[in-house]
Structure formats: structure tokens, C-alpha cells
Image (tube, rainbow, N blue to C red; front, side):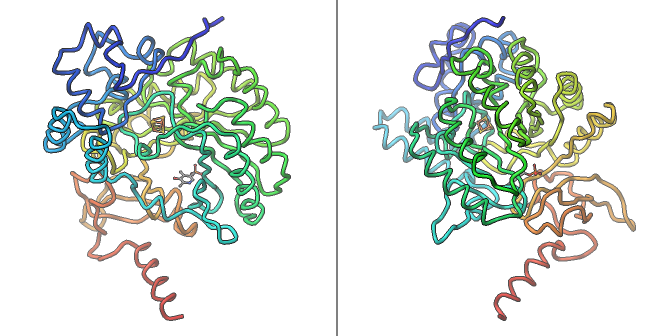
Length: 442
Ligand SMILES: *Cc1c(COP(=O)(O)O)cnc(C)c1O
Ligand code: SF4
């Protein structure tokens, strides 16, 4: 049996207590962590430090890059601004203002996420996002933090932790009413943060009313989580781990498809006995585990990494699902992989695995109009182009239709792309414009 582990978090306040930080990092490196960590998210824990990071290989180690702030994640100007602020012994509030001002310049809410908040009987449902017809995202208030933070994460503006059951009940009641009014919705995706930071009692307060409500259209309950990577003991030895697994089983028994959307960035995260055992226990409840990750420089920008990720996931019983392009937020400059290179990595890895692993789709950008897949680079009528298509669209009618952008070897995001063949707009931009005019005329 896996030994029981007591969770211990390390943040800016106490990271110097990590023995490896004291012994292996220079004074300068510790200083850089402190400066960058005052702007970008920083939290690790004893599992990440002891079992995942290879301290013989820092700073290049991918898990170290994934979790520890690095100098290059901020521009020189922002770095100096925060460094100066820290030297001035300012109050916490004053420091926070300076940090927030820098964060504000790092596009903290990419792709108009805030526009997708629905209304119900005049109430703004701030814990819900409904962008794609079939799937509603649900942000339980108690699940807006994580067991450790990823240095690239775009969810960082919302990391706060509260722990109150009454929120859960109120929020779920609204969700149930919303789902009953929207028969087109088949999926609810619990997301955050990481909903698996919640106690079983808290999570049950959300999910039980949902499965008891008899919502005929609801088929799939998804849980977006990185707990398998950052704290597999959540499913093994935490004191309410067994209760959590019984709850999963109950959801499945009730006839729902329970789908984990597990976030794995590097094959190393699949190698510990703890994660392997946790995956096995979750699968034994009748749940499914699908996997996803962005492709990022310093962490996983090689076809070998992706091939290993997919092959090892398959042998553990998981289903590869999405490869994403790093979003245009936070430290994107540090992690960005050119679209063409991302496609190359995807294609080489995809070619080298059996059809069982080719359930994966990507590389895909989660943009305002939808999830845009890079199908590849090719030449059409003498013009070099990117072929693209929507995997998900704000308008479901856009999905699956190929469209073309001018080739640009430096492009890292859709904003860097222009329509090919002398068109001035992409087809969906034309449709959106027609729609707007139509609304104006009526
Ligand atoms: C990705 C995503 C979903 C889920 O899409 P699937 O392709 O069904 O996994 C839902 N809502 C938003 C906003 C998303 O970005
Ligand atoms: S676990 Fe998910 S939500 Fe949490 S920091 Fe990482 S990417 Fe962001």
C-alpha cells in the first residue's frame, strides 16, 4: 500500500524551507523566484518537490519549469518594477497594487471568457460559463484553488480559497434550474482551479443535488483536474479518499457518464506508483479518464514527450483527448511554441502511435470564436497556407469546416494569422458581421 502522505504546501512565504531550494539554488535564483512569484502564481507541495522534480537537472527540469517561477517569465521592465517594489519595504496592499497592475498588462482574461456568463430569470450566474451548446462549465466557489500552481496558468486571477457549504447549495440550485431550462446541454464540466481540492463533503454538496434532480438532458459529468499529477493521494490516502471514490461510483451507478479531464503536461507525472494506483482506483469506479495539456517550450515541446505521454496514458487506461496551444496570457512569451512547430510535434507523435491513441485532437487554440485546430501547412494554388478548422465553435455550424490563413512562420496565436487568398476576413468573422448588421437592422 502507498504510504499515507500529509499535504504540505510551499509558497512565497516558506519556499526557502525546501531543503533543495536552500542547498541547490543560488541566492540570485531564490531572489528571482521571489520577484516573479509576486506576480505569477506560485505554490508547490511536498509531493511535487519530492517525487516529481528532478533536482539534479534544475533549472531545465520540466516539472521545475512547470511549477517554479523563472526569471524569463516576466519582461525585464516588469521584473525590475517588482524588484524595486520589493526593495522598498512597501505594505502588502501597496505591493499587491503593483503586482495587479503588471498582471493587468498580461491579459488575465483571455478570449473574452467573461462574456459567456449566462443569466437566469435576471440573475447573473457568475459561477457558470456557457459557450458551446452542449457543455456548461461550472466553477464551484470551493474549488477555485489547486494542489500546486502551473506557472503558465491563465486561471491565476481567480485563485482564492473559501470553504463554505452554503455557497455550494445555493450555486447548485441555480445550476439545476439552468440545466432544466436548457435541454440542449448534455455535459456539465466542474472546473476551477481544481474541483478535486474540495473535501468529499463539499464536492458531494454540489454533485448530489445535481444527480438527484432528474435532469433528463444531463448525460455526462466531467471533472477538470490536475490532482492526479499534483496530489494523487487525494484518491489514495487522504482521510476522505475512499468516500470520494464511493461518490464517483454512486454517480456512475445512477447512470451518468463520469469523465475526468485530467491534466498531464509531462510523462514524468505518470511515473510514480502513487499516480498509477490513483488512476487505477478511479477507473475501478466506472469513471473514464481523458487527458489534455498545452504544448509548451521548456516543458514538453518535443514529439518524444508527446509520444510517451499518449502511449503511457493508454497503457494506464486513459484516453488522450486534447493538445492545446499555450494561451495568450501570463508568461506566454516564455512558453510559446510557433504554430507550425506545434503542428510538427503533434504530427510526429501522432504518426508514431497506434490508432487507439489517435483519439487525441490538436494542436488547438481556445480562442474567442472557438477551439481552432491547426490541420497543417500546405501550398494551395501557389500560396503557402495554414489549414485550420473549428473543433468547437461559438456557432456549432462552424465546426468541421476547413479554412485557410496566410503562412506565417512566427505565428504563435490566431491573432498572428491573416486570411489567405486575399480575403480580408475569415469566414466566421464575415458571418459575425452579418449577424451584427442583422441585429442592427431589426
Ligand atoms: C473546451 C471547452 C469546453 C469543452 O469542449 P469539448 O470539446 O466538448 O471537450 C466547454 N466550454 C469551453 C469554454 C471550452 O473551452
Ligand atoms: S492545475 Fe489547472 S487551474 Fe491549477 S494552476 Fe494548473 S492549469 Fe491552472
